[in-house]
Length: 200
Image (tube, rainbow, N blue to C red; front, side, top):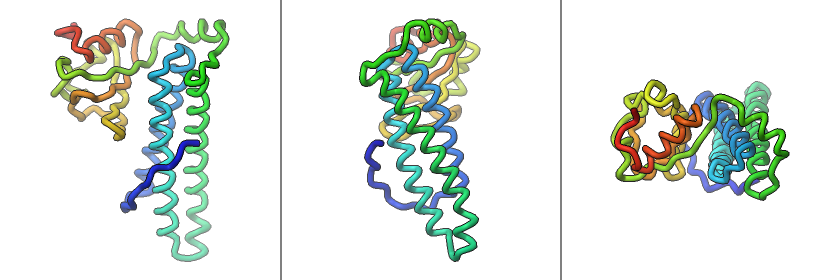
């Protein structure tokens, strides 16, 4: 398990924290399987980054649960929420273990890779350059699903993650995580690097 970074307390809704944990664990599973199946170290490293985020969220969740418990009855009713948080964290730990197959150069059997490479949708990671045509536009405004057949499902900006970032404006140095066809993802990666002037 990765080391938990120092977290300053802020009163965050337990419900919002759990929703974010669920979304991150789902993203981690997708990224981890893609990283393993395509031996993609960049995707594997994003999983490790997300595990650090998840560990911080578990810390915040537990802190808020402890502050919310006023008596024995409260503690008993909140124990189930703590269990959900713990199990969600276990899912993220398992995703990080899958990513470890790539980061430690273990690999998977070629037959397994061949079967899953036939899937129509894949995931990819793209870092945005200053010269990219994506810069300054919202994810929704780019309409990538219609243009190239991909969806940006997350953005990492430094250590900050934005899940389901439709309203976010793309900035230089953003790391985009996208799902779609192989050809569409290739087009997105090239656009992010500033290698194409349009997405059509």
